[in-house]
Amino acid sequence: MIGAIAWRRCAMVLLAAVAGAVAQPARADAPPGAGASSSAVTPQQAFAAVLERFRSRPQPPFVTYTLTRYQLTAAGAVDPTQSYVKRYWVRASDRAALTRFAPSATERGPLTFDRPAFNEPRDPGPPTYDFFRGVGENTYVAESATIEGAVVHLRLRPTSSPDANPVREVFADKDTYELRKIVAADKLFIERGPVYPVTMTITIAAVDGVPIIREVHGVVGGNYNDDGKEVDYTFSDVAFPVSLPDWYFDPHQYGAHAADAPV
Image (cartoon, helix red, strand yellow):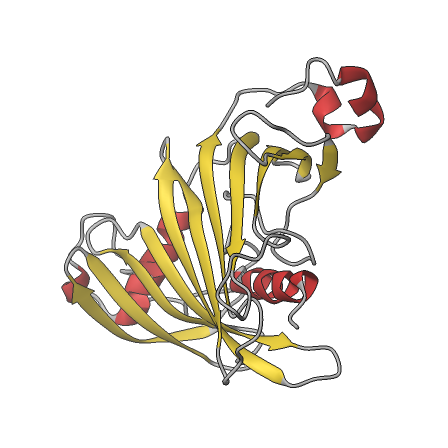
């Protein structure tokens, strides 16, 4: 049986590795600015433009959101222990977060402390996670760029260490180079068992001009047919408050604020 921790670790290690994605250095006249025709540039220049556009986004100091996790058992029924809804109030500077389960529209669980991350055995987040921070050089070669309707579809090849550099496809607006979707490869390690390939599709949207993760969809391949063959994370109700009370980020104060806790 696939464990929740194992599945989460798979997704989070993948996305941590995505943060190392980088374009090969472009020529002095590249990358093109927003509004340039994708057909007039090389695939590598288009990838560089996507990265530059993504890095130019604002960085809100706080983010609040609802995370919905959903998976099925091997029998096709909803997995009741690994399918749930949680509310988050996150401070961006250190990812400190007040969280609580939200089993229904009117019910809320106890206050808990967390640091959502994509490189830890816990639920991924926050939705403002920066895929491209800490970039290096020559990590990927953009082998092709195809215009598909309103998006440019880039296919990438890592120049080394495919496991450590898992991005395989990038989708972006063909005119503005705003990131829309990432497809990446990863592996699921079963304790004392086989290793399975995983395909992760990460959908990007925007709230108040800030690119955010809207959905993460993972599929385990390699003839894996146990619980959690597919898992979905959805980020909703995303907002960027100007400030949040300091006690949200100090679990020692939660007991004194049960009556005025956010819902």
